[in-house]
Length: 440
Image (tube, rainbow, N blue to C red; front, side, top):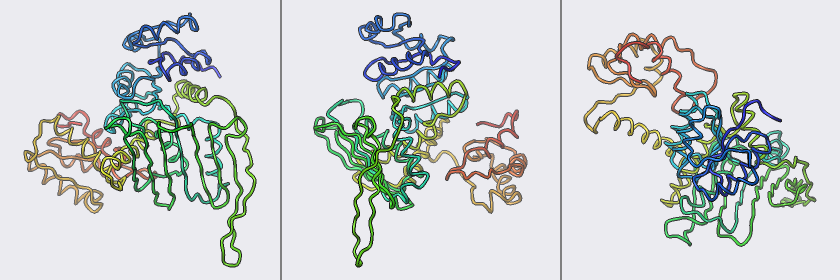
């Protein structure tokens, strides 16, 4: 389906970028090809003679006729390129990982949201017809209660130096497992081995444990004798195997095995695998089309910023476990990430440890009670100190106006996460809009 808005430019036309070029060209939505390597760029002259070629990504971002870009450069460049593209008003599809640092990902996700731009990350499995069908089987209860999931992504090469195997291979698997589980894990533990380079992990195994009792493990390696891309889901009714290296028609198999009690003994009853019919369109073609549709309709991608932040949170926890050799709690990772982000804010404000007074109010009997909150805020106001409300900071704020804003807030029926969604603070700031003492 041709969209009304062109995809625009592909930035990075190397190992993976060439596939994006091919697919966007097939969809008739390729406006330019950009790569900093002149020799590499010259190879596109013959197959795509009518498509403009550019060496500098800044030329693409300055072109007002280009609305969207697909970025397939080295992982360590993603943060700066994505940020520059969003600031230039472009919608962005970027290959995984979005960023190598959680705080950088949070920044660009927030930037895209503030500017109303599409930000999509290439977690390719989520657009694979076999995975989409597998997710449907899980969600409709066809497999019954899911006991465990495992994913193997193994190959010989492509060996990297800017990222380890966890960050190179596992984002796809983490994204897929979170989609199937429908929840975040409570804990993760990862173990790995460094064989080709002292400081870069070549092989890793990560175990994810969920509150519902579900467990999952991810085995990734670029030091393996053969290629394997296999995702297995075991339920109490059926078992499913998605094997992406199998031929068409055999990629998704359903095993109706049964475990039955006989004479107080559990006995397995094996059954023949049943192939599940799925579409055969190239997954990357579907991913590119999904991005174009989101750009055209201004809708949210399947792999949007929120989904990507969840994936990065799990990857960071796995990396911590690799580094420390410990079981890592996701709640602790989230809290540390928030603390690190706020520490940077204090640094930007020029505040030194011990040089300021910080007080927080979030117990319901204080924050939700207007009279109690009023007393607390008036006490803060008398101290002439900083008053922090949620994610926003109000300096020298008038206590009564903050209380009025809080009283006027109508909570959403949707549950929020541990730290809220920031809307209460946004409303407070809106009430105080125009007042010189407000700093957000």
